[in-house]
Length: 243
Image (cartoon, rainbow, N blue to C red; front, side):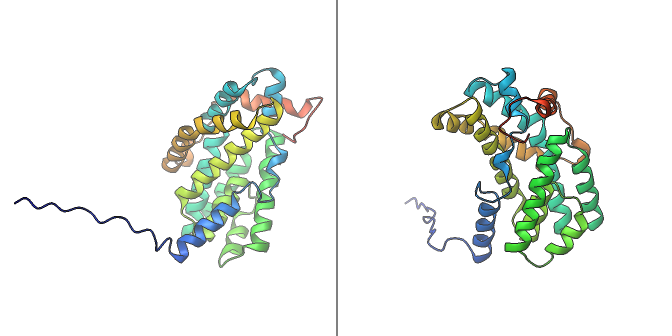
């Protein structure tokens, strides 16, 4: 007689451990649209791209954002976040300082510098005031100039939030904010906006995997049109956004 065994059904009634629940709660809070870093004020050059006719509908917005994620600031910010998280987690203040300085110098335009430094500063100030924890002040002091992805990497490391989850959530939040800007500028309806986000899901996942495996030597952008957009936005006559 043949005997078969089967795995018992997964019992999820125990839920997350206390530390896992705390990490998830903080991750969702830090990268929620409600976290007051002022992300809604910036379009990362999308406003100029709409005026120039590069973005005219959901399809062209998706293509533009896919390039920004894979070949532009999305990937680069992901690398800086990952490297900052690892340096902060290991207590390597020298490496964290170097990463922070490089990330600040890597921004291609004045408005993008304003965007990432303002959000980074706001993120750190709010985390320090409402979500302080052991070691956070030392990490902040080591980083000195903290642009947004470095700030997120540093704070998430201080709160013991896993790097992979942080990176995926960061790129999702970044993409969602870009889509929000595009939906107001094109404009797009809510359903089309969600379709764009759904179709960018594999791009976000692939970019996160690349950023996790990358070193600082792998940094680079081939998204020249988006860099031009952020430069030309500075002199755009009518503007809703700060970048």
